[in-house]
Image 1 (tube, rainbow, N blue to C red):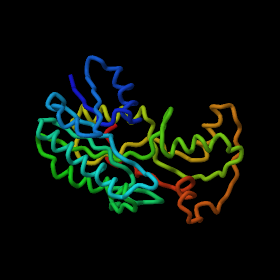
Image 2: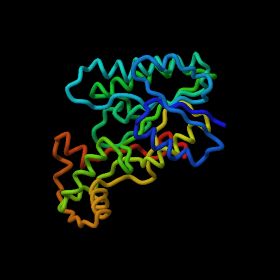
Image 3: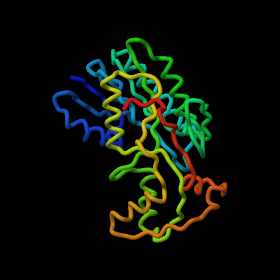
Length: 259
């Protein structure tokens, strides 16, 4: 039986994984822990085989940049060192696609990391620190998921769901984006734990997502029609929000996949 500890008691990915892994009650025991404050330092991690570190701070307005490094970097280092000292065999760190800094196009094995904001920079810095802690007895896995979607998913997917409520007419973007469902991501996490995987990992859905079709499908679930309009100039517009919605951003196929 595998024992797993998840940091971030109320994280969306954590809760999705808990729901998924409950299907295997004889094979896994999963606990969650809050890493706010210092109480977690008194918890003995030795009973766990894997620690899945999900706690962190994402894009926030009006916060000092140092917060990203204190939470995403320094706290992650503390947790990893404690995990290693206590005898945990595997530390799974959830990073981000943002470490590449790529705004448009394909990300593949030849793409170098070049984060463009403090969120991405703090995540990449943590990756580099954690990998130096990796050893034969302490495996460090770095997971860089694209946008995660599913029921009650937060972040950009939530924004797209809100947008879909009003998108009677929507541009036919003909773009492709890497995304992953919360259920499939949970399967990947299980696979990581089962194999004691280490190194970089970039899970994604089997098919790329087209933003226009996603909006249309979201509306269909509410019995609403959507009229897709061709707008060939969209990809030529150099505006961040336009690129995020209608541009291409995807992992190349076979990019560190287990499933």
